[in-house]
Length: 237
Ligand code: URA
Figure 1 (cartoon, rainbow, N blue to C red):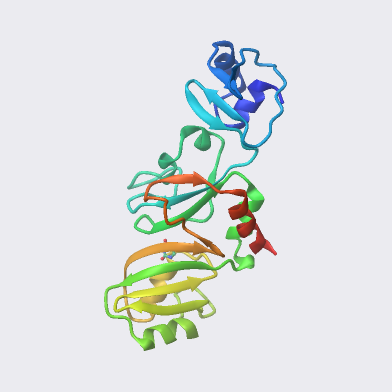
Figure 2: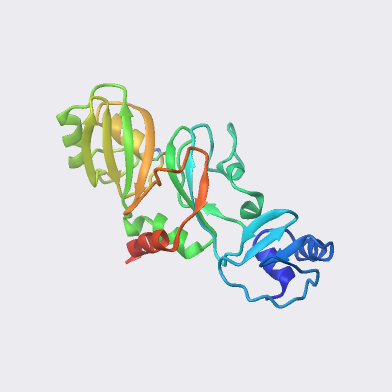
């Protein structure tokens, strides 16, 4: 692949802007300065680049995980709070990575991003019923009755069928682990309200068999490993 096209694919700007970066001597490929924008590069995942002092590893498609902090909206055009996209480096925003589904502004935890449309669809399509697990902190003490209601199904406004929790257990006097397979608007908050309690805090810690990495601090992101991607892909059936 021509070097200027390769840089464009990674989100470093228009083809012309990338050509200018290369011509200005600002690009290295595998540690070697390359000032020919038309140079034919073997584009393999992991190929190390530096662009204007920034280290980058080439990737044909981007797959990443963010530990979302509270106070960020999952929108490119946020209304009241900063955007989660502002927590990602600009080349990733530029190349069009999208969040896999959305979390509310005050929800924390596991949020995946990609620019691979099939991957996003596979994980967010309602038909796939991918389980998403939330740690729910409640206003009132959790009771056996609350857990039983969520497992039996609760009726939500505008939903014809009751919504049934795929799993639910009390883990503390005011905490539930609740798994749902849909991705409806404010779903967990509405389910808990319909069962007579109220969500005080919401944290997603698992999607499918993939757990939020314990060493990923709030506000931090990282690339998914090949093994993690396979774990998530396995959900697609
Ligand atoms: N359910 C909610 O109510 N909010 C979220 O952010 C995610 C699931």
